[in-house]
Image (cartoon, rainbow, N blue to C red; front, side, top):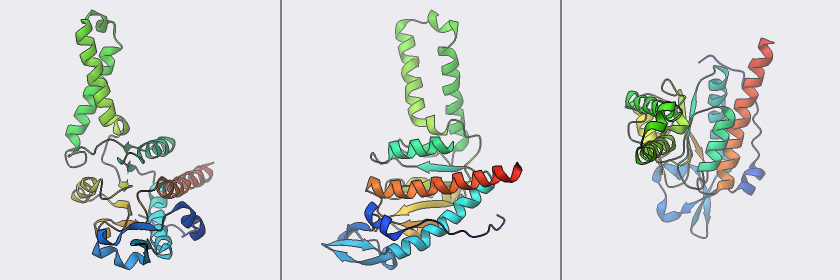
Length: 240
């Protein structure tokens, strides 16, 4: 990627504290490789060093800025219950793909099969919208509609993706470690929120922060959204 002039991103430690980014897990759950990101302990819970969070988050945002500049695709992954709606809403606003249901093995490593399933979904939808559909029995129609619903739930967020994404953003590395493993196999960069119980070395751009609190994840995703929208606006202005 071509170099972009480094910008000052609006990352405020006070705001991070209010959003709860600093709260890690209990000390018994610490992953050894997260030790450099620990500030201290409070009531048997590790506290994340937010100065480190700012440092690493800036690196992640610089990379995301480059992606947006080159109109590349960032796949958002957030399958934890409290993340789903937030991830879906932000991804849709940015017109980026997303996975909020269970990560299906082979989504990246067997991408052609995924595309075939998505194509099957489109064919079923066309069938449902055709006059021919009325000739099926009530039982047959119900079966087709259920299959459409199931496929839409599994692949709805990635149905417009024609090629592998250029990078993926994972909200919870412990929940979606398979997504990270598949991305590495396909040499796709991984950006991820890393709480104190995960291995940050598995991530290309780790963001040390609380991955449980919705306020923490929302703060991070909103900053990602701001950077992408800002960069798109700059590219648009340059063309006009």
